[in-house]
Length: 315
Image (tube, rainbow, N blue to C red; front, side, top):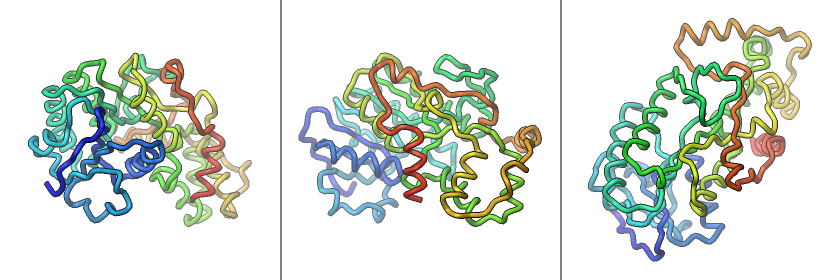
């Protein structure tokens, strides 16, 4: 341990993972809203990514997420814990870390755990309208691991203390998913972009602006939850397709693509390729509904079309 955490407020906020896009936005927004007792657990190898002198309102703890003793010292009684950690280098390590975290939480009297998951866990569900009652059929290893983590928390933690947020693909703030398509449109050759247009065509893109995700997290910091599981999605407000977004990016970045009217729908070929390669994709025409959180009083601060404009302007 490099720095001991001193808690000044009754209900500290303990964030696991703060160097990612969501973590950095969350830290800034908590500071902007006047939170004083913000505590961040970071892996020791992440130390150089954080400028502590510019974040004096935040208490930093550097440790090993696989050491129960480090987690036990970090997790405080009456705290709100926000878990943003997902290890992509070795996905099996996620279950080890999650199990350790769940055991510590079970031993201590916490106020709440807010865990960030992904709408990818729904996998190849046959439902056209996806909501919290839909059965998940995860296909990729990433989605399977995400669902295992959810179930582990559900088995260990009191339901009144647990909030799972299944988020759509995050855009804004340099999010990976949006930037991947942006790079393909702006640097890919014209013919390759045309082939991708045909393969993906009218596939719905399930997107959510990063500030809406942050706002949902803070909503549950400040309010009691009536359920455990929520989709963070604006599909009921507006759904953009791969084809539409591809041409929106091209127009904004002044990239010349083939005439949109020449694009043919070859999504059935893409579905076969995904099945053969074992990759997961929400490639059907399903809609993911984020209505449960709205019923509890949350309103997405950024409307979907505004979020697309913002993402393009910041790209």
